[in-house]
Each structure stands twice: as structure tokens, then as C-alpha cells.
Image (tube, rainbow over all chains, first blue to last red; front, side):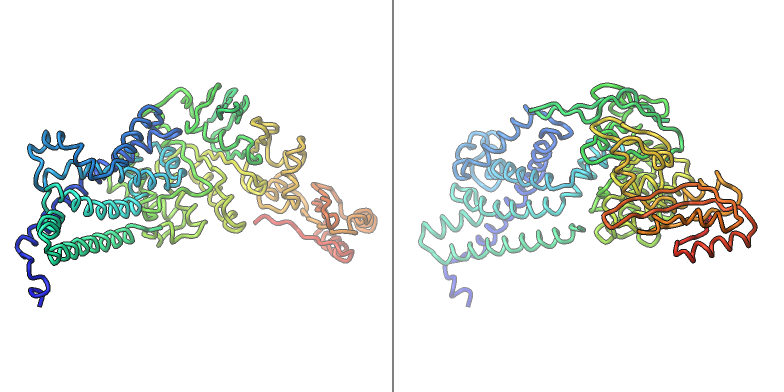
Length: 222
Length: 341
């Protein structure tokens, strides 16, 4: 039945491409989370009247975030080829896609982190200060736990965007379902391959969204 | 205990310089419940934040228990803050933590071991009357319960001073009274100095020993609560006192009056409307043999007529006093003997 609907699909390579997409998404989401969180916290704390209020650092971080968030991803990949070559030693394959994926999405997530942190009641931060908390304690025990639901739903949205980015990266040879859909499906006019790759991408997206929603609800005690 | 010397705090808003606190001198003694009352914008929020270094004064010094808060910073200031804790109008609990974990937070900051934290948290939960709610999240608590968590959290590191930032302003009157009772209890049991700011004279009347009235960043009146209530000098103080015209019925006042007039019976008369115009006291003295001494009285004029209370000291035999009371009730004056407790 499935064989007749998708006559041209090579299931082994389809499975391999799925794993590559999952690999790229997972690793880049992980690094995006860490870098985005750090940038978001830096943006928050260096803003006026905050604990590390510093105009210069705030402006520089803000500029970095805005610039990399604004460059269309497909162009960013090309711009980052020299850096990729330096870091990864190659510009082909799933690993070569990682620098562009992370640099493209970390600033996007940093903005979401900033929004999440701004939602925290200022009184709670003041209360922690009044108890003699260090800034480190405030970050780990107030800022992060109190914004947890928003941070999780933010990384869910970002991870889904990253699935899309991996497909784009696929067009320039990163591997994964994007490459398969483009080279094997589109260029060789095998619509069923493109369709199957699309279905698999959709399934990945739905699973990420489902898990993200579940964790967000569980984390929210408000 | 707490000494403020010529404390001034100015805020540069960009367009203008705002003087929130203007040359305040204050001296608060050990174990005292000290109230600061003022309307919003009077500078009381800023003033209380100068006491734990959340705000730095533009000039002047703040000294607590011999330590100059205004001179220290960094780790030393953080250490000092553990002994000058604070509760807030909106409680400021961490919603992501349970009651137990919220109370544990200051202990984590102070570096107390896990085993000791658990023990201390249990003591505090009992102290503030939250037994059974340990594992609830703040969202599952009422306002009064949230403030109890706030108080327990503030007491965790055995502070010397408790700062209350409009701690009851978000609560209904009944809960306010319960929280105020808890504060008095803590003050007595732990000998804690309490500094509170409020815009409600009721709070001052109910629990404070002394009060400072703030207006435009300055302390315009300062004194014992009973004195300020009996003879407010400034216009703003009079307005605050008028918030609670029905004075003389609180336990604190009765106790105080009893100490001043230990003999005979203290009787409180309440006059409403036309009765305030009647010579009832003259009649009482002429027709009865009791000795009458006026202890305290006031008449407040409201939109709907006058309302007054008069506290008398009646001396004589039990029968004579009973007769006098019967006469007053016959005259349609509400008369009751004031008892302690």
C-alpha cells in the first residue's frame, strides 16, 4: 500500500535523512538554548535600572542580536561559509550546518528570553535582594525558575523554526530531509519523495510542539 | 537601634530632580514598633528602602545596631540584609516554589545546611500558623496566607529588624487585623524591632508604639501613638486621625487607660446625633452620688451628624456604679464598662 503510494522512496535513505534532521535540530537547539539564554540574561541585566545596568554592553549585545536576527537565514549560511570551514573543516554535511543554525537562531531566542524575563514581577527580584542574594543567586534561583514556562515555550518555537532552517540548509548540502526533498525529490521530479520528506518534517514538528506544551504546563504553577 | 541622620534621597528623573526624602532624622529604639504614615508620594517607600540599602541616600547616614548601612556594600551589605528583613504589600513570593521552598529561600542564601533548613522551616510554619499548607504553591493561598509566608520568610534568618512595606494594604480588614496581631506577637516573642510604612491610620493605632507622619519627604510630626491621636498638631496628622474617629475601644488603648486610672470603673459612652447636645453628664452628677472623672472624649462631625465617644472614670460602690449606668441607659446613651481582654 505505502510502497505503491511512494514508489520512488528509498526508505533507508529516508530514515537516514530523518536522523540527520533530528541530529541537526537537537544539537542546534541545545546550543541555541545555552547561547540565547546567556545573551537574553545579559540584555536583561544590563538594561537601565537593572542589576548590571550598563549602556555600552547593553547596546553592543542588542546590536549583535538585532543584526543576526535580521539576516535571512539562507544568506546567513552563505556569509558564514568561511567561519564554518574554520570551525568544522568542511562546508558539507549535518555538522557544517550547525554554526549557521546556532548563530541564526540564538539571537532569535535571546529576544524571547528577554521578553520572558521582563514578565517577572520586579518585586520578587527586590525581595531576593532584600534577603541578601547575590546576582548569581538571583539569576539561578529567581530569574530562571520564575520565567521557566515562557523559556520552555520559547525554545519550543525556536526548535520548530530550526527544523525549518535545517531544511533550508539542506539545499546547500547539509543533508537531512531538506537535502533529500530538494535533490532527490524536486530536482529528479519525484514528487512522492518530497511529499514523504514533508510528512516526516511535519511529524517532527508536531512531536516537538506536543512535548513543549506538555512541559510548559507542568512547569507553570501560577 | 536605628539611627537616621540628615538623610536625603534625590532622584534624577532626567527632566527634574525629585527629592523623595528630605533631611530626615529619626531614632528608633530596640524592640519598638515604629510606624511611618503618609500619603503616596510622601517618600515613605524610599525611606524604608534606605534602611536595608535597597536605595542609597544622596546624603546622610543610616545606622542599624552600630553598623553604618550607608557605608557598606557588596558582601558586607548582603550579610547585613539578612538581619534587616522585609515584607511587602504584594508579598513578592516566588510562584515557582511551594510555601516550604519559599521560606527556605533566605536560608539557602545564608548558606544553611539542608537538614537545618528543614527544621527551621517547620518552626517558622508553626510560628505563622500555616501548618498543613507546606506543600501548597502561592497561587493556592489566600492573601492573608501569602503574607504569612512572607513573614515566615522574613524571619528565617533571625533578623533584628523587620521592615513592613504596606504589608496589609492589599488585604481585607479582617485579614489585616489577623496579620497585625501576628506582627505584635512576633514583636513580643522575638523582641524584634518593627518599622512599618502605611497610609492607614488603623494600622498605626492598632500596633504601633510611636509614629512619624511624613509629607513631602519630611517627617512633620513624631510622637507616641496615643499622644498623636489625642492631640494631633499638623493638619495632615489630623486628617489621618480622622480616618479612625472611633478611638478608645482598642485593647491597647484600654490597657493604657487602665494603667493611668487603676481605680473605679472605666465606662465608655457613645453619643450619636442629638444626644451630643444634651446635658447628660450634669444630670448624672446632680442625681447620683458617684464620682465622675472625664478620662477621654471626642466628637467627630460627619456628613450625617455628630458622633462622639466619652470615657469616664466612675468611682463609688458597685451598687452606685450600677445605678449610674442604669440612668445613662435610660437616657438612651450607649454605656459600657471597659474591660481588659
